[in-house]
Amino acid sequence: MDADRRRVRLARTIQGAGWDQIAHWPSGVPESGPWPPPGEIVKPKLTIKQWLLTIDVLERWAAAADRSGHHEAAAQERELRELIWLQAHGVRLPETLRGQP
Image (cartoon, rainbow, N blue to C red):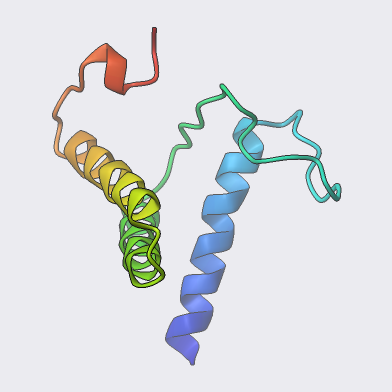
């Protein structure tokens, strides 16, 4: 139970880092649309623990998507996880993969 609480607290710090980056986003406003806004890339500065939780959660979501038959969503979540992992290890990605034209 305590481990879950720590994960929840850590997850909230990740969410906060994202909100801090997009300060103009109407946090807590019902039906304010998807987050982040379409076309806006979020690159929060996170600690190693935060990135590890992010990678773990992406894999859990991918597994859940696979189990429910949403294989395209699972593939996207795993691709994002791999991109984060590669960048964490200093691999420079081509501009087309970094969200730049």
